[in-house]
Amino acid sequence: PGMVFGNAYSYRDINLAALEQKQFPVESLPEENGRFSSAIKKSREQLAAIQKARPKNSSGPIQAIFEVQMALLQDEQFLAEIWSDVQSRKVNLEHIIAVKIKSVGESFRTMENEYVRSKFSDIQDAYHRILRNLLEIDHVRTNTLLRITSPVILVSERLLPSDIALLDIATRR
Image (cartoon, rainbow, N blue to C red; front, side, top):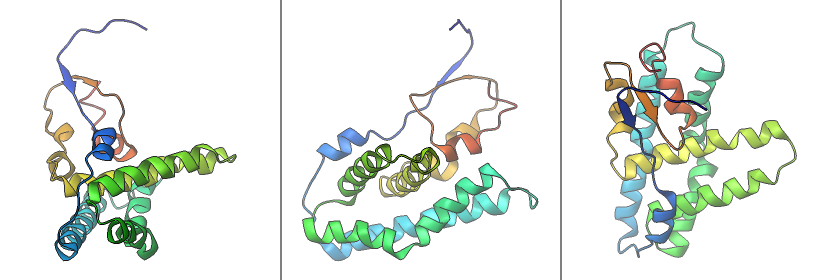
């Protein structure tokens, strides 16, 4: 508890509850599949660029965040489960992914092993990266947090592991 004065930067995350509510029929499965493929491709390219930009000797938990995301985005079963729901329910990808995040989260919360429970944030991070690309949210590609040039007070309800990993702690207090 305390008080801080300074310039505030408000960082907003995707409103999953709104996406759960915004369910609409998909008129063309091939078009929706194209959107899905494009979002996956963009997500993989972003992760590859992040990994390339990191120092060669970089390892540990920060590198692991991006490796887990890449592994999920290359996992055919992970992707097939999302697409299978779109095909069977014939509703938009954003809704399907929001519902999946909630469902997977509920499953992970009931797990006894704390380490396994903690891995939900990595899975959630991958889902969010796909969503950001589907919704064409700018900061996933250019990360608006990295465009901050002076010290700020970062205000956010929640940051995903990859958001934290990309922060330049020296200029953000």
